[in-house]
Structures are given as structure tokens and as C-alpha cells.
Length: 275
Image 1 (cartoon, rainbow, N blue to C red):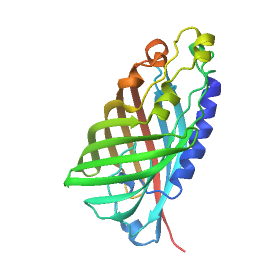
Image 2: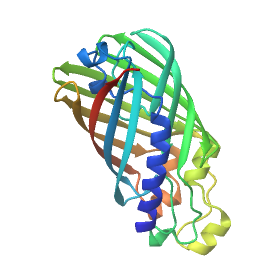
Image 3: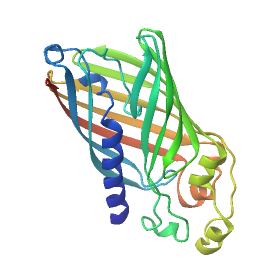
Image 4: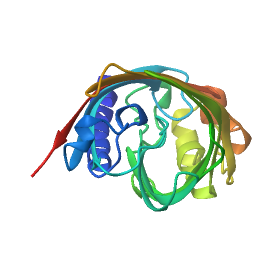
């Protein structure tokens, strides 16, 4: 367990810091304030803590702290962002519709983290990059679809559909909505497939060659609080139920669980920079 936590801590810190370097700050730290108006850039330094499954499909959990930071131009419009949006940068659009690029970190699976993973190949932490499209059919409802391809750790296609009902009651922002995850055959096989050799060595699983499709359905709820123009915090919970070929995997059925939950907290400090 210690080795896995160390690997994911440094992997998360590096991956998220890099992805966040040119990203936009969280919604509750993005409001146009006097700090924004008086400077050219707005920088947010954030501490994050997440309790999540040890690996995708696991039944045990671990806590991982990691830092991140973002910056944006002070004159950029500040829109709502969900904790699971990852790094995203709009290329064109407006308040109602926009498209852009996206990147996110995905934790790995290490056979040293769980005794029952003996003989199962480890999967390194991954960085995925791609594009997104976002549409607000009404003022408080955001819909969004993202499609990504792994550029480190996995080299497969995956994506997610999101819908969020957003309610702002200053200084609070609340959101809740469904999630649907999907991936191609290579993605599903990477995280849920079992080779004959792995089955022979492990003894608790059988060979399995899954196909692509919808991998999970669930939802996310968030509450964010803005103390002042500089300090903000948030807490969120996410639940996903693995379905289809992902849920049928012997890694899930024999070693893990189809129920995947995540709880996260953040504390951020935002300040302006001029030059």
C-alpha cells in the first residue's frame, strides 16, 4: 500500500501540476473581483485531498493528497467547473456553448498494493488528452461531453458525459448531476482484461477479453464556499457503478467491486499578478 500511495502521490502531483499550469481556476475562485480587475493574471494555488479506490474497480480505498495550480487572464469570463472536469481550456464559444481542449490524470494499478493482485500486471498512472463540448440549454443546467486519448500510461480512447444542475447562493455554489463513462476496447481491456498468463499465476481470476462501450454510470454532487476574494474551499462526492464488460471482469467480480466512490476536498488561495 505504501508504495502505491507514494507512486500515485508523486504521479498525481506531477501530472495535475503540469495539466493545471495553463488551466482555469475552479468556479468558486473564478468570479470577477477587484483582484481580477486590478491585475492582468489571476493565479490559484490549491491543496487537494481525495479518498478513492486503490485502482479502477477496487473494493479498498486510499487517501491521496496533491497540489495543483491554475492561472487565467483576469478578463476571461468565469464559468462553472466541476471537480471532475480536469484541465480544460476553451478555444472558442460563449457562455451558452463552447468547445476546447481537455486533459486529466488517471491513477494506476500496482500489484504491490493488494495481495490478491499477485500476478496481475501493474498499470502506471496515466495522462489523457482530448477535446470537450459544453452546452447550457437553460441558465442552471450544464451538459458536457469529453473524449480523450491516453498519452501516458494508457494509449486508448475514453470519455464521459456530464450533466450538472448548478445553483449559486452566494457565497455558496452547489451542483449535482449524472455521469456516464465510456471507453474503446483497448481502454476496457487495459483496466479490466485478464491474460491467460495472469490467470495462471494469480489463481483467483480467469482469462477475460472485454469489448468497448459504456463502463460506468453514476453522479457527482459538490458544495463550494468562497470566504473572500482570495480564499475558497469545496467538498464533493462522486459515485459510479461499473456496468457492461467492465462490471463482468473477474478483476471486479473476484478481486474488487463494481461500486466506485470518491470523496474530495480542496482549499485554494487566489491572487493577482501584474507585470
